[in-house]
Structures are given as C-alpha cells and as structure tokens.
Length: 365
Image (cartoon, rainbow, N blue to C red):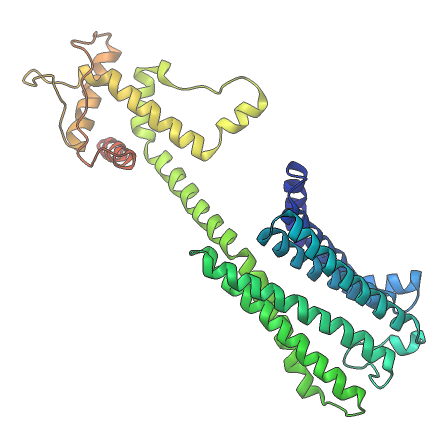
C-alpha cells in the first residue's frame, strides 16, 4: 500500500512538478518507504553486514526523522505563502539536520556491540545511547505534535467525510506524539539507572502501533469512502445496463443506425468504449433515440398524436406490435411524438422509466 501511494504521488508530481505540498508528501512517503525494508530482519541484517553493525538502526531513525520533517513541510507549504513557508521550512530543515547529525555522532561514538540492542534492551546508562533515543524521540514528539495541531485546524474547517478522516489523523498524530513523550520519559528514567519492567513498556509500544494504524486509517478514510461510492455507482450502472438490454435489443434491431460506435478504430478508443459507465450512458442515449424513431408506430387509431402517455406495460405491448410492423416494412404513419415522463423530468427519472419499460418487455417475453 505504501509503495502504491508513493508511485501515485510520484505520478502526480510528474504532472505538477512545482506543487510544493505535493512534493513534500512524495518525499515523506519516499522516506517512509525506504525505512520499511530497513526495519525488517532480513533488511537490517543485510545493511549491517554491508555497512557495519548498527547502521540499519541509525538509517531507520534518520529516515523517520526526515519523514516527519517532510510531513511538517506539507503543512507549512499548504498554510503559508511562498516566502513565509520557505523561510519556516528552512528553519525546520536546520533543526532536523542538527538532530540527525547529533544522533549520528552519538551512535558512531559507541562500540557496535553496545548499539546493537533494541529500545527495550539498550543500556540507557550510556550517555550516547540515551541521547540517541531521547534526541530522536523528542524531535519526533515535536514534529508529530505540530502536525496534529495543523491537522486538527484543517479538520475544523472541513466538512464530512473529509473532516472525519482529518480528525482520525489528528488523533493518531497526537497519540503518536504522546507515545514519543512517554518513551522520552522512559529513556530519562532508565538513564538514571532505574529498571522499568516489560509490562510497563508493552502498553507504550501498543499505543504507538495503534496510533500509527489510526493515522493511516484517517488519511485514507476520504479516499476509501470515495472508492466505495464509486464502486456502488459502477455496480448500479452495470445492473441498469443489463436491465435495459430487452428494450435496447428491440430498438437496435429496428434502427441499427442508432447504435453508437467508438470514436475511432484505435485500440485506446475501443478500450474506453467498453467501460461500464460509457456503455451505460451510451445505452440510455440509444434507447431514447430509438423511442423517438419508433414513436409514430406506437400510436393507436384513437390517439390524438400530441403526446403518448401510457404505462410501462402498455408501452411494452405497443413496442412489440410496432417492431413487427417495422419488420414488415410498414412506413411511419406520422411524425415522431413525445413520450410522457410519468416519473419526473430529470435524467434519473428518465432512466427509471426506461428500465420499467425494459422490465415489462422481459416479463412479456
């Protein structure tokens, strides 16, 4: 999912290379994507084997710091004008550079064996180890808290469903900042030589994981809602396209010239013409055109010829009789007449009426 999101943002950035917020999001996803294989057991051992023990952990923390820095840059470029956002982003860049250099020096100043442990097993009484975890954690807390604050501000300005996703993301970011703050306290306590039992540290790890999942759900909530709505529309158009088949088959057999063709014989145009939405709208147009052409044959002897106002079952029966006369070569006895819109004059009512007539044709068959 992370790779798909990065490739999509990379495609958008190619189309809008001067979009600074989009560039910041793309770099944030790139750093997060690069940090993922480093955290895996195989990836971390491979990096340590090539570059030395502890390099994978250092690279992971540096990439996480850069990811939250670019997340801040996204908000800075979105909320401020060009000069103000550039100045603020430059200052934040200086800060994250200082933090990265400091934790790198701290990591390189201790033996590899000391730096090889995880957060729960590291010896925090060593000042460099405590500074490495504490310094990175404090910057993460600061950046995540600022991002949560800006996200909450945008959530108040937005409407549903966007506000719902933004509130979820804001709570997730705030919870991540809280977890980083608790970890910083744990580092300070353990640096003083006080052991913290594992049952106390486990909930902090769970809180961090839960906040990450909540943030991921928040930033994808609006897109997921849109995709679900799009899928529902796709399924409805596919169902209605099939329900219109009896009416369309009758009219296209009577008037094959009304069947619309692709714009050109090119493969791309033929592929686009097979899309569900295009076939649905094309079928509606073809059915309406066919009804206009066949309308002179639908009037009985006693009809006045001004407006054809019958129910769906009666119209289906007249369509059967009219198609038989057209097959025998009977010319149109009068000009086309309009059909009454019994369900309303909007497009959706028109579609419902066409489907009702088509269902009546299927039932009669």
